[in-house]
Image: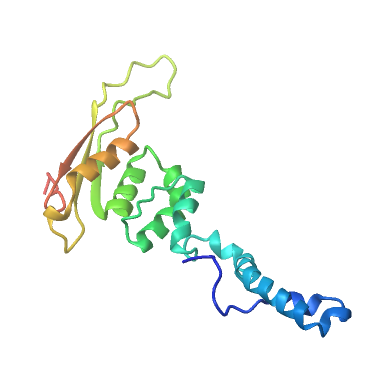
Length: 190
């Protein structure tokens, strides 16, 4: 979409109508201001619709990349427009969960369209009791298992993109290992 001159777009505020009465019947003044109306009509239209530009579900597609920078959202011009809109709309929510299991699972679902399971905590342990014995040593790594959503094939999961996204979202002090499965993991107890 372009916010440039749009042929035939009428101005909601014609300048010729706002001129003093002396120029109301002046042909040259009316033609001159009509030319300015053509230039200003897209500006007035954009300003009249400005709130829609800040709503990612309504903003023009070419405006989404800029809007994504405002909220720190992941944005890839190769993604479908609806996915880009959802990523921008949910950016703040995902930032609240960044570095958590739920945040990682949601980001993988949103960005890559895969289901995921995260186990391990990457070495974070603490005790709420002063003077208590140290807690047992936690697992040194986080295991992220991903699989295609129902109806998808395992070959559709791009392991390199999954690893890249997991690396960017896992806390810096953790070691994250990724496994790509063909379907949901089977419960080990069942």
